[in-house]
Image 1 (cartoon, rainbow, N blue to C red):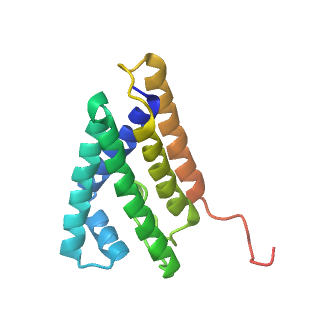
Image 2 (cartoon, rainbow, N blue to C red):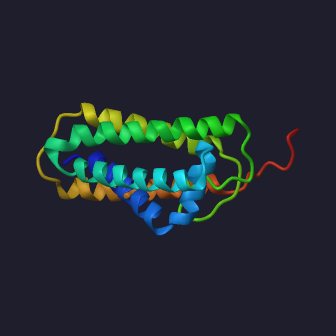
Image 3 (cartoon, rainbow, N blue to C red):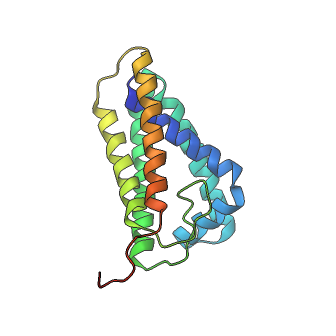
Length: 167
């Protein structure tokens, strides 16, 4: 198994668990992000969790890995465009559900870039030839990437050091 497959699988699985643990918060975030009613937002959020879990599992099975990668890419691309749309329309004080903690702020470039970046990684993974069982190095690399991914999200969430726009 490729380290990238395990890394993306871990991200997808954690996102699915996040949606199942914080159902109300993420239903509201989905509804606001997509400009739909709360019941539809809840349905879409839970459907996304099911797709994420399915894609995560598919990435772990070599014969299903390209399908799982393309499914993940479609999901992340949809999310990226929804975030970009919300950013363009000037959403403020908005918890996009992008992280485990509740963070109410504008949708920043990092959130949009992250979603597009994950889309690109998933597409790349779909094109990489399938390999055998995971090596210890691949597992270690996947968890190292996951740690760096989480750290980048936390760093991006820090308040800006800029005090004024003229600086």
